[in-house]
Image (cartoon, rainbow, N blue to C red; front, side, top):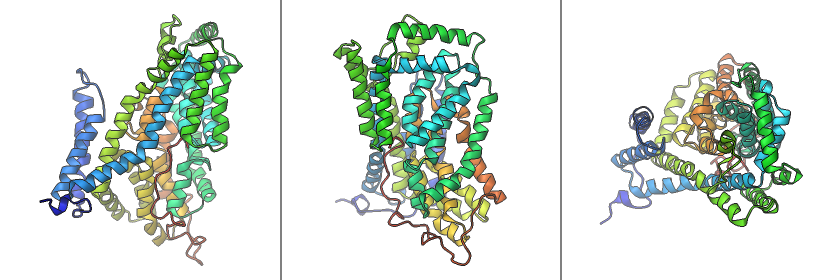
Length: 497
């Protein structure tokens, strides 16, 4: 006979913080073993098995407190379902990279970039270009997977460390994404917090703007790591690219297609599919056989220019190249799903809220909670929705404008998502750019500085807006809810939307 805990509708008891923190400690231990102990062995992988191990620990703790398998399984499935748009996009991005390489699109972008960029100002230029593209498109993912990919190639040709280039790409892509009215998270945060879009964007600029300036200054003074003969080396690579791929106007069609569709607010997946298919057509026009094009889609493009460094750069792409990243996302969402379904995630966040005694500590708690949820739940939307729902009443009681809450959850949630290897954003960026999250992490200056500025401003009382004392509310939205969005709704499409 089936026990009550095994029924699909059964739920267990509240799990105390002391027990809820055990899966986090398990994850830290498992990751330490993999990264520090097994790193020199033949073991392949990073966060996959630690995340699954931590998920098992979380499920066992849930069982101790009466949580049956069915609600836990349902939580896992719901979490994976939230990640499915990202998984589909990852697969299409792999195919797009393969066809764009076969068509000569990426080599052409690298070739033209080598004509315009120099090693001395390369990193600031990368950050600025990605900022503009992302601001216009509202898409950090599309920016990283297209313009960012080309910048990685240009930087490698100039002798710049790919990790530094990737860091500048991430800084620029997330600056534009965070301030673009077309970005999904930029729309989600004010809806959850209870303010309007443009009020939110204007308030965000006060912390994100200084962070961008700091990033640009750091990139301007940072040693790019390029050798003295980098410019000459770039000229040589450009000559090889010109000879092998004959860059022309035809190679501009796929990226222009992406740009037009993004500006027309076409959904992410069909936009990328269109760019991938157009890349395949250009490859066929250029004389590539249909078999080679299909192979590039599935297994990636294999470069045979004769230049070892260039071939290593251009041999990549294909749907299969994203398999490891997809597995990582599935493992991460499994862990996050168990933590959320059993209430452990909410229990941890509630304890953090209880420790917030001042306005500065409340803002700091909000930022740090969003960062923590990015790590634990591996999903930036949960990192925005959960703190937004939890802390809205606390902000109201302190007489704080809800735009402070919407800014804090973006300063913690959106901006740090690409810094977590198993987060959907971190996994995507690493897969698209071919640079591990742990390598570009330290160079993503804006993403590291922005949360610190937000916390410091909170304690100093700078740019902390109060509600009008005579009304006690803000156009009917000061209660932290916004026209049916108080439950957070379903997660929108990933960043390329």
